[in-house]
Amino acid sequence: MAKDTIESSAAVAPAVPEAAGVPVVRAEGIRKSFGDNVVLDDVDLTVDAGEVLVVIGPSGSGKSTLLRCINLLEPIDSGQIFFDGREITTRGVKVDQVRQQIGIVFQQFNLFPHLKVIDNLTLATRRVRKIPRAKAEPRAVELLRRVGLEEKAREYPHQLSGGQQQRVAIARALMMEPHVMLFDEVTSALDPELVGEVLIVMRDLARSGMTMIVVTHEMHFARDVGDHLIFIDEGRIVEQGKPAEVLDQPKQERTRRFLRRSLQLAESLEELTVQEVESDKEGGRE
Image (cartoon, rainbow, N blue to C red; front, side, top):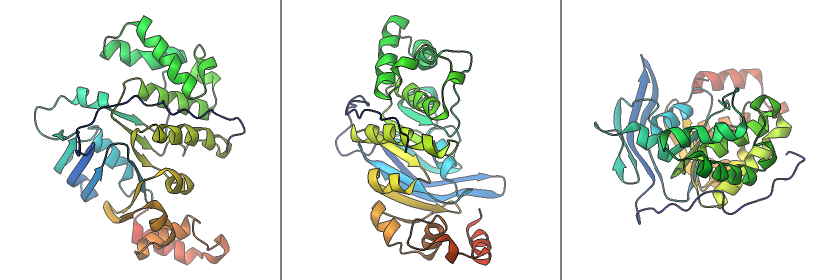
């Protein structure tokens, strides 16, 4: 956990009106292949307003592709994806408009190195939504304050730590006032001591009521912040339920193997063997 303390804020996410009883995100029978490689195989999921869905699974299991399909960065082969009750995988959908309402933060920060932090936040808002700089900048400063980086507004990305850059990336995604936020292993590229400062921002965002889908290997975050958890392997949802139930008492053997290897259960590293690891790879395509 980072040594520096970031103040909690209950107002990081703007209030977004949702249709009563309509899930923010619903996916039915999603299939996605790259050539002969089936990456998503008949995936169903539902995310209600204000819910935090956590997605775990081995590398290559389809987690990142799932987020990219929901954000329409990747076309699906079959199935349907609904956003706020409207299908977004049908013909005629205005993709750019959908993406403005579905924020996504990647493992890599993807900040423009030649732009100051304040300009990284306001660029899309000014160009896409045509919001004048005089109105966009106060909103950007407010978001930077809420992620603990108001004093970095006039600095360039290379002057920030990795954790600070990732917090800037989160603030940038929030500038578009999305209805849902997608996080794709956003702490994986960070030094361990910087992970905490990013997770705190995500925790506060969840507490503010933002609907979130989080792909992560941070099991403590999954347990403490998640409302629902799914374990994906080989493109299929193997197991799902309340985070504590899945993490503490997994019903499926594949889930148990994955969690054991992640050292989140009682077993220690000394109890694992190379043969078991190799067996898991063969059974879980990692």
